[in-house]
Amino acid sequence: MLRELASNKESEFNTHLLRPYIHNATQDNPYEVALKETQSQDIENILRHKGNPRKLTSLTFEVKWVGESKTTWEPWKGLRSNSILHNYLTTNGLQRLIPKQFLDED
Image 1 (cartoon, helix red, strand yellow):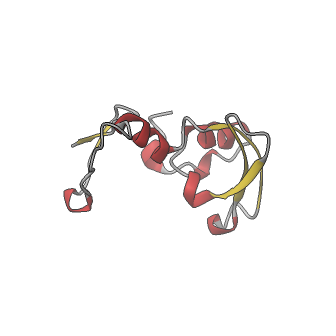
Image 2 (tube, rainbow, N blue to C red):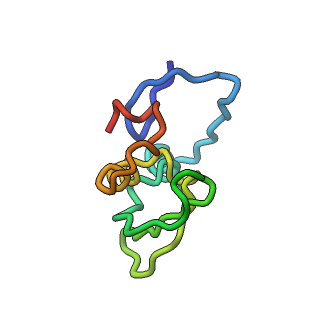
Image 3 (cartoon, rainbow, N blue to C red):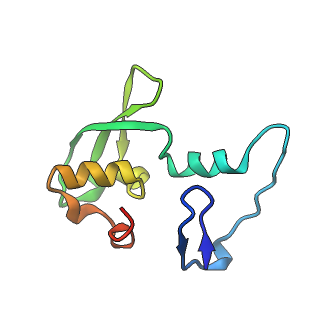
């Protein structure tokens, strides 16, 4: 079992995929690094999407970032584990696109 630092959720994980984290107490905070990897703290909202929902690699989402006035278009692959995307998909009738491992967590 692996407990994610940012979400405090436990999940099965292949230990051979783990990489060492080299902590520098004067420059970074492990919790903030974990949040950044999940992107949850940075995304304010997902505004819209484009592409074909039947072809996930074609999907991109317009993301409004916290503290930023400009938006960016991000691919589904980069956002697929993000709870804000899951909320957007559910609100827009696209909940079938939420990966199965996240369905019980949102």
